[in-house]
Each structure stands twice: as structure tokens, then as C-alpha cells.
Length: 169
Image (cartoon, rainbow, N blue to C red; front, side, top):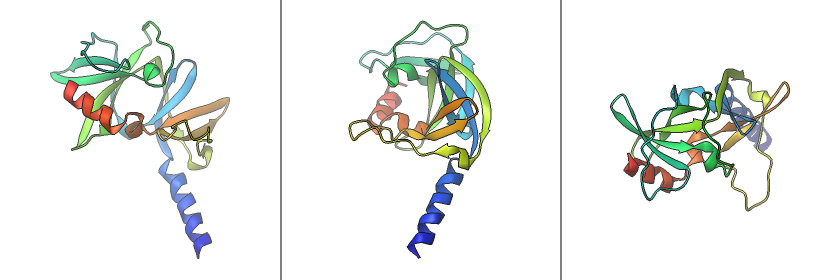
């Protein structure tokens, strides 16, 4: 009985991660976000800085009359900051906030493509020790020529950080 249950859980976990992902690069690494979380992709635009926010929060943008907070994923993941190029863009995602969903702009080095990833191509995140928090990684997609890190965009920011961003906007 329990063996069948664990098998069902494994199959569910596999199909939960299957689907279309928008892939993008950060520091020569490929990442993916489930396409259903993506609202739109826009080029870089003027970002208004907001005082008293963490370094990875670049500020806010006015997107067709709506104020949206912008986070630099490079800085969020502890990578070195770089100058933005013509390939740098903002992926507007919808994440789960405290009351309802929140739109957040995420700055990435460049957008690659939309991939259809099969459940059997996704492996669990390896454990890197107790001190490293990898909850925001949905899994590792084995692709021809490498691995793409699939992000659970709802977990990239902590609940406290999301509340902070809601206030900034």
C-alpha cells in the first residue's frame, strides 16, 4: 500500500513539473520559469529607485499606468552586478502574495526560448547541505548540452520580501 502511494507521489511530482518554460540566462547559466507565471517580457525601461529596500530591489516601473516593483535576479541570487545591455530585459511574473497575486518585474541577462519540458527530464534539486536554501528551485531539467535550473518563482522571494515589494508599489 505505501509503496503504491509513494509511486503515485513520484508520478504527481513528475507531472507537476512538466510543461512549457520560458528560459533565460543569468551569468551564463540557463534558468526556466513556468510559462503560466509569465505576464509579459519587456525591454529595459527607466526604473525609479525606492529608498530603504534591499540591494536586489532595483525599484519600480510604470507599466501602462500600473506601478510594478522590479527585482534584479542576479543580485537576488548573490551574483555580481553587471551593466545592462540591449539583451537585458524585464520578465513580468505573477506570484502569490499575502492577499492575492502580485506582479513583479524580474531583470534577467537575456531571454532564450520557450521549451516544452517533460516530467521525466526533471530531477530533484541536489542537496547542498543544510545551510543552503534551495526551496526556490523546482528542479533541474536535463537538456541536450546541459542542465536548466527551473525556478519556483513563488519562492524566489520570501513572504517578508513580497510584503516589502507590495508596499514599495
